Image 1 (cartoon, rainbow, N blue to C red):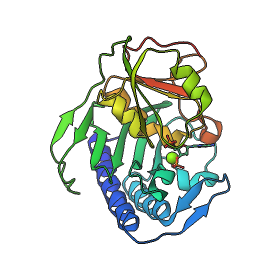
Image 2 (cartoon, rainbow, N blue to C red):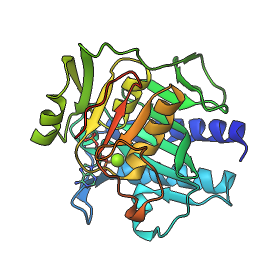
Image 3 (cartoon, helix red, strand yellow):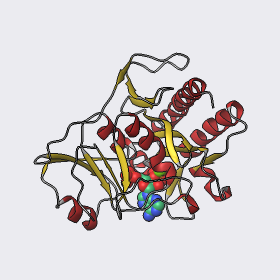
Image 4 (tube, rainbow, N blue to C red):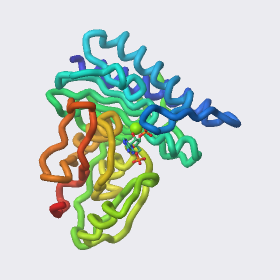
Length: 265
Ligand SMILES: Nc1ncnc2c1ncn2[C@@H]1O[C@H](COP(=O)(O)O)[C@@H](OP(=O)(O)O)[C@H]1O
Ligand SMILES: [Mg+2]
């Protein structure tokens, strides 16, 4: 795999998909359909999926591709593949709350090693460079050349006063009970894979997810967080969260800056 090429292509496709998503977001109205798993989908999900899949297949014809919108056609995957959630945080998108992201990642040997997370309505873009380190790009995100980038890295947390981030649209008692085990200075809520990025930049220390997600929801954010020095572990045994699992379903997990003294579930 040519990582320089991969980063260039992932970044460009995320911007092209983000542009399309924002075009639909800005329209007066858009249709919301319900998928077989009851989750909502819009023409923005489908249009962004097409842009990204066509682009990845053209650039990397030999690498397996898994996308949320085409998930019904995926089977046993092996442990190296590209994985895409073209619009994570669909509920945020529908409710016009802004916290939605375009997510593209490379998983190698069950580990997300490169990824891009782009939040077009927030004008924030996070990705890994070819060497796997994480950056945030600022500016107006030109398609064909990288704008100014800043290396990002996780916080050195104060375990007596942690900053915790949790889902905006999927928050429950189990999550609150687990968070109650920590000394929390403040809580943020955020939608989509942005939660991983807030830990990657040091804006938060801990993100426990006691609820369902799929691998495409987490792979790109996970890659960015790893590149910034953070980690994602399973909620049940605190071992690393891996990819290429049956049905691409994740167990509950905890994303964190390594300095957080993790509590058992
Ligand atoms: N019951 C469930 N089963 C599978 N995935 C779920 C789920 N509830 C939420 N999710 C996933 O969580 C994502 C939203 O995350 P958050 O709540 O952190 O914003 C959704 O992504 P999509 O919006 O791409 O469908 C969805 O995939
Ligand atoms: Mg998603």
